[in-house]
Length: 97
Ligand SMILES: NC(=O)c1ccc[n+]([C@@H]2O[C@H](COP(=O)([O-])OP(=O)(O)OC[C@H]3O[C@@H](n4cnc5c(N)ncnc54)[C@H](O)[C@@H]3O)[C@@H](O)[C@H]2O)c1
Image (tube, protein in one colour):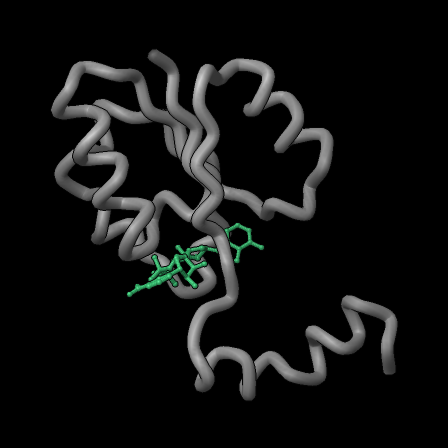
């Protein structure tokens, strides 16, 4: 099975990548490395397809989804500290400010 994980360099996403690889599945991830890290997937970097980029890139996401049998959406801006630091950027992005 081909598994596509958004946020695959994050805490949960990288563990999901480990688990699906262990049962013989193919794994691709998409991550902008905003809070995640390549360190989390260093041990499997040669066994998965790593796509550096943002989930707001609709065309890229659609292409990766089309190639997958299962999509696990873990990409998210997580944590109070992250949200407070990104507050203005998020408002601008949502065109609320
Ligand atoms: N960790 C927990 O205990 C826990 C518990 C319950 C729910 N969750 C949920 O699980 C999800 C993942 O949590 P986590 O702990 O793995 O967080 P995390 O920050 O470790 O992982 C999120 C990943 O998403 C990536 N990301 C963020 N914005 C992105 C974007 N626009 N495009 C591409 N990649 C992007 C980050 O770089 C990071 O690798 C979140 O929705 C979180 O709310 C986590």
